[in-house]
Image 1 (cartoon, rainbow, N blue to C red):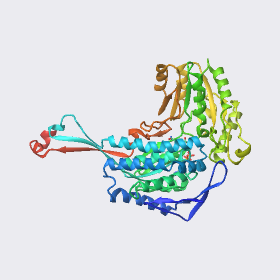
Image 2: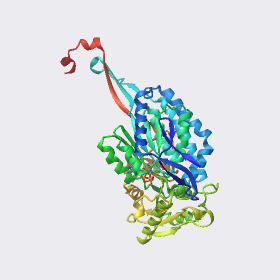
Image 3: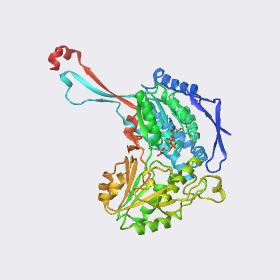
Image 4: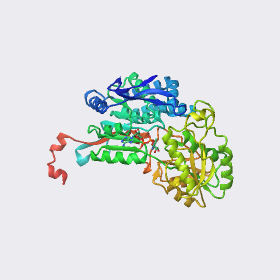
Length: 494
Ligand code: NAD
C-alpha cells in the first residue's frame, strides 16, 4: 500500500501515529497516512525558518525562482496519470475533474513563473526627487515563514495555489493538507524535491484541526493562509490576531447565478446545472442560488428538470460520469440534513432529494441532483451546503435580482446570463462578489485574482494580488550625501 509520509526539511519521514485513508467511492484503502506529532510540526516550522534565514533563498534571483516554478509545472505534467489516479482515489473526484485539476495545477505554476519574471520587486518613485536631494523606492520583500492550511475538495489545486506564491515571493512554509485527502500533495513534495527547490522551503504535513491549531500557534509563523469553511476561518482569524500574523482567508460561499429574461436558454440551462453540480456541489464557488426572471421561469424550470435527467451520477472512473460521491458519511449526512430541513420549512422539492443507489453506487455516498424552489427565508437560500442541492428563487426586476444576489453573508462568486453584454455587465458590477462570470461558470484564469467579499474571505489568491499577499512592502529613502550636507535639517524640512 502507498505510504503518505511527512515532508520535512527535504526528507520524507514516518511518525508514530498513522491511519489508513479510504476511497470515497468504494471504501477501499488508499494509503497509510502518517500524522505528525507536535514535535514533527515544530521541527517543520524550524526547517522553514532555517531555510528562510540560512540559505540564499529569500534573495535568490527571481529568474531562478521562476525556473523552479516552471520545472514544477513540467514535472506535474510528466506525472499527470499518477496524480490523476491518486486524486480520484483520495477525493472521489470524477475522471474529468481530476484531469482538469492536474492540468490546472501545472498551468498555475507556469503562469505564476511568467508573472514572476515580469514582477518588479523594486520600483523607483519617478516623481520629483523628495526635498531635492533624495530618491525613493518601493521594495517588495518576502514576509517569512508561513503556515498554510487547505481543505479536501480540490487537494492538488489548493496545494498549488498555496505553494506557488511562497516560492515566487521567497517565503518558506509548512503546509497542512486535509486529513481526508493528503495523497497528491505527497507526490507534489517529490516533485518539489526533484525540481531543485532548496530543502526546508516547503514542508508538507497532514492532520486534522488539532495539528492545524498546533501549527498556527507557533510564534515563528509570520503569515497564515487558510482555505476552508467560514466557521473555521473565524477561529483562525482570532488565533492569528493574538500575534498579529498576516492573514489570507479563502472561505465558503453561497453564490448567486442570475438568469435574465433574454438569456440564451441553451447555454444557461446547462450552465445552471454545471454551476451547482460540479464535483457533487463540493466547490466553494458553486452556483447554489439560482435566481431566474419570473417571465421565463416556467420554461426555464421545465428545461432544467428535463436536462438534469441526463446528468450521470456515477463511479468516478466512468468517463461518462457527471459527478461522483461526496467525500464521506459526515458530508453526506450534512447534505441530507439540509434536504430534510428544506422539506420541513415548506420549500418545494422539484427534483431529487435522495441518495443515489444501485450497483457500484452502494459502496459510496452519492446524492441525486436536487432542486428546491425557495424564498430568502429558507435556510438553504442562506447557508452553504457543499452538496448537489440548488435553491431556486424568482425575481421580477433586475434591481430585485441584484438585491437577492447580495442578500448573503457570503460574496465569493456569481454569474449573470444574458444575450445583452452591456446589460449583464451593469448587473455584474453591482454584485458584491470576488468573481463574476457572464455566460460562464467555474472557469478561473490563473493570471486573475480569486477570493471573496464579505465572509467569503480576506485577500486574494492568484494574479498579482496573490503574489503580493506573500510580500511585505518597504519604503526605502536614499539621500545623496553631497546634496544633503548643503541643507541643515530644519531648513530642509520646514
Ligand atoms: P474546514 O474548514 O472544516 O477545514 C479546512 C482545513 O482546516 C482542513 O485542513 C482542517 O483540518 C483544518 N482545520 C479545521 N479546524 C481547524 C482549526 N481549528 N485550526 C486549524 N485548522 C483547522 O473545511 P473543509 O470541510 O475541509 O472544506 C470545505 C470548506 O472550504 C467549504 O466551506 C468551502 O467553501 C471552503 N473552500 C473555500 C475555497 C476558496 O477558495 N474560497 C476553496 C475550497 C474550499
